[in-house]
Image (cartoon, helix red, strand yellow):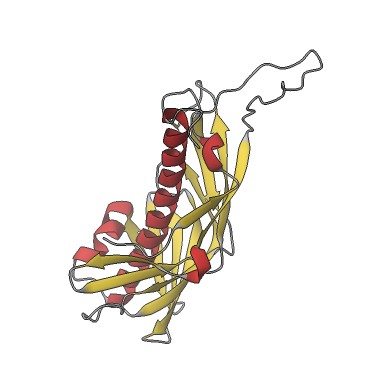
Length: 225
């Protein structure tokens, strides 16, 4: 794997991970310099200067360009909530990827022809709980090469429904959807699976970066610039 760009996380920074609440003055306001953890944060993910993030698999190179920023919100809970924690009693519970978020995928950057190039748009807000698959939302995948082709991915109970050019939807469980890239599925279904996997990869890696920033902040001496 190699990358040609740095993902930027705006608005979440290290407050998302490991932040504790605090006391305050008698007027209820926080003391100067005291960290305050809010109940929710907005975020955006984009590539620096529009350069795509790339993954190399053998002779194939897949480029993923956030282009128009991927945006959304995350909600934080306390130790009594169900979610996941990094050990400091701060939980990331619910999160979403907002309607209108877009990115592009190009699988033709290497020497091996693959699945063409396509644009992905969040048609309906994707809603997640903790690190589980989304419980609601939809993606539209429009091919640029080969084309024309319009794929709709709708989240349903325990999986997705896939449709090509407004045709009859085909239901897939999450495990079946994840396995499409490795099987004998039609190319349009593989493009659908790759679109979701690319979004999930970008999303998870962006939040991993936030965790690393928090780790650096926690472990470096305070006098180390």
